[in-house]
Every structure is written in C-alpha cells, then in structure tokens.
Amino acid sequence: HDVLNRINTIPIGLFSSKEYEQRSMLIKRFAFVIYASEKDEYNQYLPEILVCITDLLKLPQVPILYIQVFHFLRILLIRISSKNLISFWPIIMSELIQVLLQIEQDLLSDIDGNSRSYVQRMTTQEITLSNNPNLILKVYLYACKLLDILLAIPFSDIYQFQLFRSAFVDDHVKNYENSTLDTFITFSIRLSKLFEQKFQTIPIIQTSNFPLLRLRIISNISELFPFFNYLSKIHLYDNLYLKKDQIFLSDKTNAIETSILEDFLE
Image (cartoon, rainbow, N blue to C red):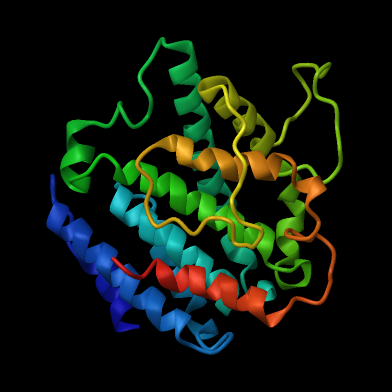
C-alpha cells in the first residue's frame, strides 16, 4: 500500500527524468511483490492498483513507464483470477491496441517512404526522458509479450479475453485476397503482411514452446516479424496456442512464469 501511494505522489516537473525513473522502479518493485504472492492475495488492493495504472497512463508517453506497466499487467494476469480483473480489460485492450497501431504506422511509414516512423518522430523531451530512443522498441516488445501471454494462458483462466481474441488472431483459414475495405483483418495478419513487404522474406520461428517471445530487448523492429508471422498462421499450430480448454501442463505454466521473472533482470 505504501509503494502504491509513493508511485502517485512523486512530483512531476518538466524534463524530470529522475522522477520518471523513480516511478518506474516503484512499479517494478510492487510488480515483484505481486509476482511473489499467492493467487488473489492482493485482491483488496485492486481498486487502488487500477487507479494507479490509470493515473500513470495519463502522463506523457515515457517509455520506461510503459515498459513497466505492460510487465505489471502480465503479472496481474497470472496472479489475479479472471473474475477479479474485469475492470482492467478496457486498459489492457486499449493500451495494447494503441501500441500495435503504432507498430503498424511505423511499418507503413517505412514502406511508403513519406514520413518518419514513430521511433524517428520522438520529441526531444521524450528522448531526454528515456535516455535511449531504443526504449520505444522495448515498449513494442513488452506490448507484444503481453499479447503473447494473453494467447498462451488457458481459455478458462482469462475467459473475458476471448471476446477480443478475434481482433488479434484468426483461428480459422480465411481468404483476404478479395476482401473489401469494410472487412476487418486481424492485427497479426495485417502486421505480418507489412513486415513481409518491408523485409521481403518470410521468417521461421525458432521455438516450438510458448511464450514465443523470450527476448529482453530488441534493436530493430524486424525482430518482431517471426512473432507476428507465427500468429498470422495460428490456426495451423494448435499445439501451442489453445483456445479451447485442455490440460495445461505444469511445464507450460512454469514457462510463462519464468518468462515474466526474466524481465525483472536488468
């Protein structure tokens, strides 16, 4: 409770990189407390956690904060029962979709050659606050890791997500070649096609286990191509991402928890 209060009471001034770094470390500290807890142990603090996250997202888009928020959301998904996370879904979905749209715009900008990408458009203030423009790429990575976990966790554990799943992946073979402008195409297929246009190759993902994304940092947006290429063909890989309830082996649960734990390391 004390950490939550401190996160939202640190004063914010112009170009206050120290304050943002303090908030980032406090979020990380509290995230570890939740990670180390038992299932639903911190349910009583969920209203305050929701207010804290909402307030953080009202601040300027500082990469170090967004990285920790996405990491924290992954932890909530494995430590809080789905029925208690209902009020968090609007934030989870809106922030995830916003980053995926930024990735899409980056790829479109590079392909068109008419405008700079989001990474290139970072303002002087954003660069000063992050100290590293590549942190934007890390925001992209951590948002994708959130999607990775959402798809990997069993249906019964996050059943509300199934309402949104079709926005990200297509579980059935569809022909989009003759689609109209009104036809919605899932993010994974849209992004995979843009990556293919940009890089003129089709990557082969090197793992048969999930979560797929075990990278802790990326230096180029192209490193996300194998992930989206795999998701665009998710209907071919029922052995990894299962929409229907099946026995969820302990080693898979451990893999999810380990992937989250790895991201506490600097």
